[in-house]
Length: 324
View 1 (cartoon, rainbow, N blue to C red):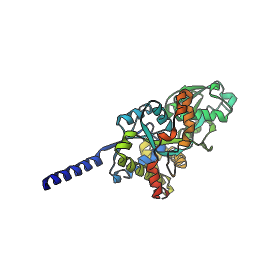
View 2: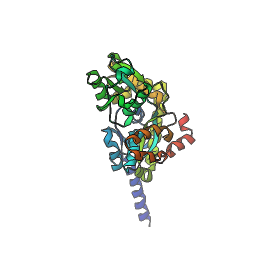
View 3: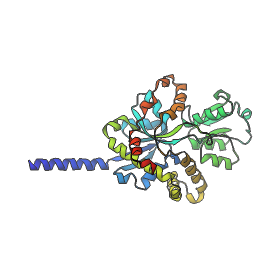
View 4: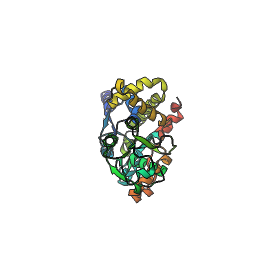
């Protein structure tokens, strides 16, 4: 009997160690300061001290949800509209924390464009007819008293591709965010509309997991959320600025000594919109839902609250962790 009990104890211990060392893949559709808390948690050992062996990978935004559901990644750093689209396609995923709120996008134009009248009928570089660039286009046009039909939206690609297309004069206008807005301004381009100063109720970035992970490995989800939240607090603390800039420059693969202004703007911009209490607020996803519904009317029937699990953040909030 003693031998059997000993064998069971060893098996349980081995299983526990194996679970602790299982690689945790964190996927991001784009690399930028909005996900600096993850980079901080990786570099500062916030994941490691919670027995999470993590790796951050960047890949096409169109593939992240497929990878999440397939189990190729365990956490998806993404945008709410992706989860809404996923729900319409039957992908069982939920948002477990918010990251940033608001929009710091701008409609950047050629110096010759000085008004809404000058913009009419001209191409504007975006990334498809969903997601943040498209949202930014609709909102900036609204500020100008214009509609989408009065410009020619072009699917150019990611932010780097849009920036390069603008500078190469392949398009006279583009939706950009920092640091590309600053880089474009230095080249003489104008910010015809800047959304950053506006209080837009828009949950921009979130962390999502599969429903399978929530059912079968909630302990790992809880530890990840705690580590990520610690990364967010480290980011917001101004005393950590120099170290945060070094970490961000490393992940952006930019030489800090030569590109400090660019790195610093990205850092400052997202620090301002980083959530203090990172709830995945369903009310701040309504605009994203409306935009998805433009192309898919079935989205009007989506229950946003059903796509959210705030239980992990609620626990941290009750414990006072988020107030530190």
